[in-house]
Image (tube, rainbow, N blue to C red; front, side):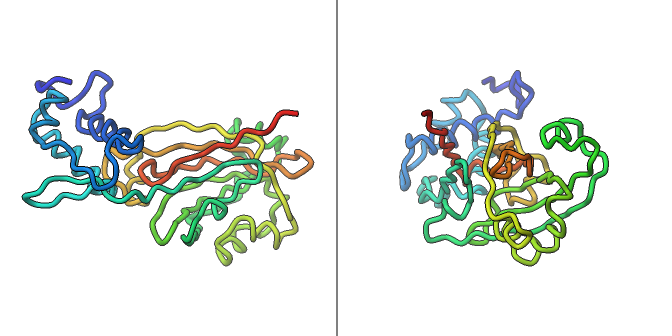
Length: 246
C-alpha cells in the first residue's frame, strides 16, 4: 500500500482494506480478547500509509465493537461476541444461540408476478408468482442479518401477516401447515455492505457482509424458498455442515 494514494489498485479505500486485514487477524485469534493493538505509528509503518488512514481503519473496528480505544492507553481487542451460526439440512438460527434471544422484523413484502429469471428457475415457478419477503434478524436486540426471501406464493398463503405477528419463519410455516423443510443448497460469498445495509445493520462504512444464498425445499424435494441473506461479518461466523455420505 502506498502513502501517496488513499485508494488501492482494486479501487477500494485503503483504510477499508486495512480494517479488513485487522478484522481477519482478530477473527483468526492473532489478537485475542484483551490484547493491545500496535500503535498508530506501528500500523502506519506496517501498511505504509499515513496515520490518518490507520485512524479511519481503527475507528471502523471500534464502531463494529471489535476493539475499544482507551485514551492514553491504546486500543484493545474487545471480548468476542461472535455468533457461530451452524447451517445444516434443518438450519434454524435459534439452534445456534447459547443464552441469547433471536427475533425477526418484517421490513417489506409483495407478490411478484414476474420475479427475476434465476429465482423463477430455482423455484420452478413456471409462470406462477413469487412472494418476496424482506426481513431483519436480531440477536439480543442487535441486528445481525438482512434477508430477501422468495417463496412459491401459492404454498405460503398469508405468510407476511403471520410472520409479522410471530417473528419466526419456522413457526409461521407450521401455522400454515408446513411442519418441516430442508436446506437443499447453500453458497457463501462476501462483499462490502451497501449504504442501506450499513445503516440497517448499524455498521461502519466499509464493513463487510457475508452473503448467503440458499434453497429450501419441502421434505419431498419440492422447492419452497430461495433466500439471499446478508450477515454482518464482524458479528457472525458461519459453520456449514456437510451432508454425510453413505
